[in-house]
Length: 205
Image (cartoon, rainbow, N blue to C red; front, top):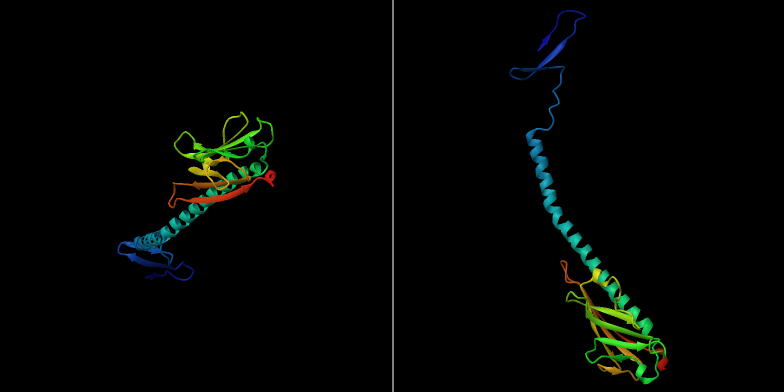
């Protein structure tokens, strides 16, 4: 309703918002979101969360799997690289210093020179926790894990050595075989890789 009191007086429009509550100035007060708007907003957010959760889980699973495979492959590559670089320089004489593999295939020994103290040994053995890893020793020094970070990246590094296609003994041709199995048991999709390689010692040619 309108009320006027003559020329020059202010005209005020009053709206009845609800019985007993009049609002002046021609506009409603800012009362924020209504309950219905809040319910609709929460419903939409809930639907978005439900539909996006499987996508997030799949993405995290894919990232975890890719990281696991990369770590497994890195350990396998570095294990073979460390061994092959040294083994290629193994001496061919005397015969007692030729590459030698233990009867069970778990240990490999060779020499880089005719000095008996210049021996290199690689061994697949337990790390004390029940899992196998590859270790290396030079001369009289203690065993070190190969690569040094292997037990932080994977759960095991197992395998075996062979010479000239047989399981054990001294090599007569300078051919040494290695079978290595690297893996992780943890994660949504456990990862492992198996690599086989024949390494030929240069001094046998």
